[in-house]
Image 1 (cartoon, rainbow, N blue to C red):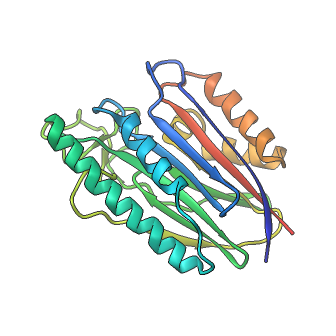
Image 2: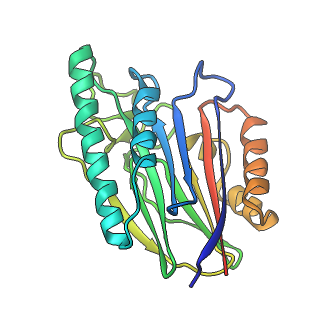
Length: 239
């Protein structure tokens, strides 16, 4: 069981995109960390990701972790409805974002997600992906939401879930351990487009402090093509 943690977060535009549609949230005060990735190429992806982190950033945390998770889900449901309304008012197909979240409890960690932003857990020298991408087909640089009127290019991955995409929103949750020296990495796909899981694991193995881990990850991602916005949050558990 753990009662304390260290965390850090960073986001960068990258080398290709003209602006940053990602947003991050680091709330050590309530044990909540978030990465949101606005849908690239669609209208106001930055508006969608920013709305997610601003709304979640304003949440108080009650004593009960399950009540906190319920308030997170209620908040995302409202964001989903507001983004659908905004898209309709602007006459665009979608204003949306993916999201991945980590919630701390002294006995366990809860990870929630919608879309293809990822959460990894590193423990005892082994990296594992906690989330499962909501993508059908081959995930690559041109992943699009499958509900758009125009089909994606042949062979491209189709994003099957996003906030702001459909009236009914489903958030997936997974439970992980809460043990000393466990590390968690939340990231937009600007990280895993540029490096393999083996490289992410190697950085987790080499760097103990969250800020140092992020420096290593961003050094690799931005040293390569950096085709997308790059965002990550790192959390390390302590006794």
